[in-house]
Image (cartoon, rainbow, N blue to C red):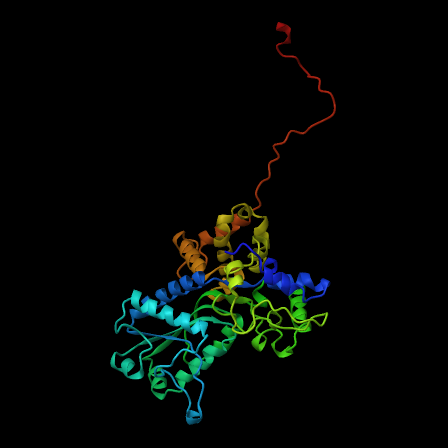
Length: 411
């Protein structure tokens, strides 16, 4: 994790000069609420998650892996033709950081898990038919609005053969991504090809997920709009209010003032991210790659899932038990959607999975993620206020005279 906050980095300090003095604290809060995902954390997290999903699906039949990609640019000769998937070999555009890394991860996965007919990268339609592929796994880095994934799924739907196989239940689609936002979740919900909930390491990364008060959230939105040149992009693409950047790419759903804006003094805007390709500069990769904002404290998280009393209970002095207790509290209140657990409790999917396994092993929950009697008892115990015993002597300025002098007679 980076030791430098974005607002304290060289480019961060320069970016803050764009604002009048009263707005600097709000701008710094926005900047320090960004997550700057390092390539190592991104790659290891996505590979780990994809490996788990692939191994589960390979038990059901051969698996095909594809990166989520934009449609190729049309030429005059094919302007009337719709691009469908699975496509013939499509070259990766220059500067396409996300596609290059995802393609490399897919190569790594096929080598690690055994490149064979049971797992293949980018098979064409004839290969899928010959080996009777049963699962398609689409790999992506981050979905902030869901638009790119929707466009890609629609191109699969345009293939009549794929549409037929899917309608008969012969072919299922799964999305595996490092992170996605609530807006993307809403956009992807109900797509005919995507029956299963997307698999993600993390969920959130937008203004609503940031640990701000409602007043602070309103001030950040106003800041982004007031200083924006392009009001339509003030809160990012489709007003998605993103807060995640990666070393290999900076999504366009981030507030536009991080790139450009209008200064209070009329001088040239100092962007936080460099112009041109949406990537961190080499200096930023050294300074802030791996930066994560501090998660909300235990009291705030407990209040989020309806456990305000928990912060005054015995568990407040047991930090190692707090994440498990928060998960149990959320389950008690009916939160059984994994994405909501990730978002509300500021945990990764790996952490949530581990905590659920621990709770199941300890008998706190059952297989349906309902609290058992033992789980309810544990929560009641966690909310019990600890006894405070004052062991200090009560002092007094009055002189002390003993009421009896035992043993004095022997002097």
